[in-house]
Amino acid sequence: MTNVFIDGQAGTTGLRIHERLASRGDVTLMEIPESSRKDPEVRRRYLNEADVVILCLPDDAAREAMRLLSGNHVRVLDASTAHRVAGGWVYGLPELDEHQRGKIREAARVSNPGCYPTGFILLTRPLVDAGIVPRSALLSCHAVSGYSGGGRRLIERYEARSAGHPESLWHVRPYALGLDHKHLPEMSHYSGIERAPVFSPMVGHFARGMLAMVPLHTDTLGEGATVETVHDRLDARYRDEPCVEVFPLGDDDALDGGFLDPSPANGTDRIELFVYGHDARILLLARLDNLGKGAAGAAVQNLNVMIGADELAGLTL
Image (cartoon, rainbow, N blue to C red; front, top):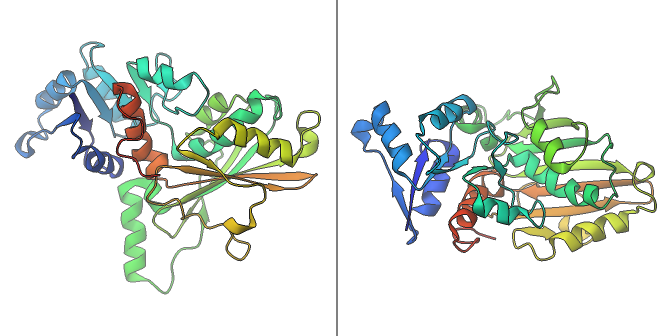
């Protein structure tokens, strides 16, 4: 039995992790009584008495929580951005390479990946490792997410808009136009490229679902690279990964009248990868539920690896 304390249980990700763990027979959820929720000493005690702490907090609050730990006897899984490229932390993406599961299993500190980086990294890392995409490559990533990826405040804004102005919903809207998004360090570091990509995220007026897209010019790739070799490399890398599905090359059956819907992976903890293109240009696409494999589902998967449980316990594929 593993004692787990979710610090930030009331947030979007924390609530969904709690729902997945509440009925588990191998996990005991430690919950601060309502009357003591604002008592800092009670929180400190719970943080230090758990076997595993899951941080579902803003970055600064996550760093502050780490300062409250009195030693390394408590294992930590951090869902914030605060420690994703920090020394002493293991990146919680089991599919990153053949060694990552073992690192997560043994780690005292694990950082849960971001939703956008999960798609970008799983699309590009195998190609970088194979020399198909040079480490010096100048990449771009265009992505769109449902508004639930922005947390409670954004959810409330979009839901209020839907209720008050159903005839005038917001269009897909780009953001982070300063081109310094907080996900960039992990996107470049764990994909293996030397320079951060140009990353242009967008939010759509739908609750959940996500697409991440990486365009490639074949004449910038390794010698002999083609759309077929790119697809074959991804297919071979993830063939035995239960949470990753690689669709057939140029799969028209996945399209709806020529369009790729961001929502079919909703309610699951898998990520779906696609390759489209021809001799000159290639488009890599990843589709996932930003609240599933992009957040709570990834955290549960990491927790399972950390405590030696069935990796797919509590997941939906």
